[in-house]
Image 1 (cartoon, rainbow, N blue to C red):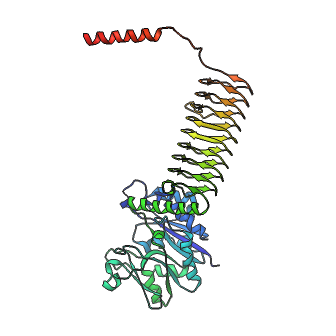
Image 2: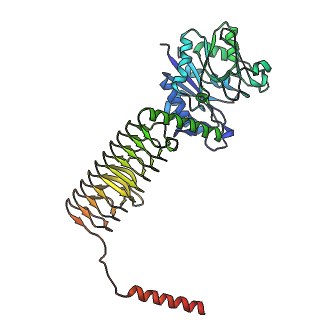
Image 3: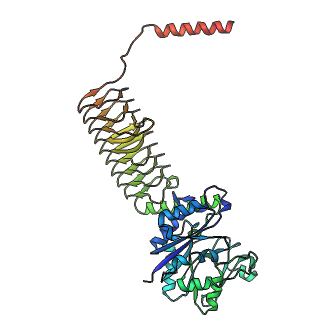
Length: 452
């Protein structure tokens, strides 16, 4: 198979997003557009990836370098059009022999299956393969003009098109594939004799045809090439992504009572046989094993839920939460960086942060793992079969041994041996008649104040 490389254009200003965050660092499904673009081209077999950035967004460059290293960065300065942007990557690919894909960092819904037909066209003899689509409203898009044989003749920008050309529904999406040497040869000949005095990538089509090359187009769904230039478009892309994820998980055997209310991330993993109730959010880094039940209004992030476990309703799992098989995490329970053993239960109103809960242990309502002293985090360990009484505060570092119990309302500051009972609260005092006398005194004071 011919070697593959990719040039991802990420140098746009993104002013229409009206955000301090660069456009390509906004997220769909919890993943930045730039990361999603890199993921997609790598999954398509591109062994070399070059990111073209501008000098106006150092955070974009930092993100790209973190993923691919500094050798994968090309800087476009000043910005003189899309052909000029791709030319900025020429040096980084000077030693590459194979096909080069050009794509964009602001098309977060593009998938590997959308790109494969472009490489297939190249393998079938096309000198240049383009991606086209048929938008609902083609008003502002460049039209792909083809011969009766289906080969592409040229791309006409909307503002330059005549009435017959504007009637064409096939529009240019911008992605293309060509041999590296020929591609950069065409790019070097692109001129800027236009109203904007910019170098347009679409001009390579005419140059390829003029050289006797064969140019063909593959039609992709409009959703695949959707750009995210504005907050509205970002929300529309998120909606498409979520619908794709819902359809995928339903097809794979995940039961969702109201799928339109469930939100997923790019890396969510849910096994067949899981039930997800209404209004659940899966933030990045979540794995749910078969037979688990995620009940309504729960929020999970960076967490693992083992087979047969039950989470929620109204539960929050934060990064590092590992809920064991058949364990229960109930309403208004927050778990962060705690491994919960098999069959353990924390059913009500608790915070479990940094530690371990042994198998079949029971965490009473209102229990708090006091894990932070203002400077450092410390671990709380609850042993197998232990019973933590309601409204207990376990001040870390501390261990409640296997089979041990803590009395309700206790503040546990020292380790509790296995099978022991720890009670740490002040003695109860009863003062007969005190409440009645208090009310009488206060009522008299209030009456006197009104009369004065």
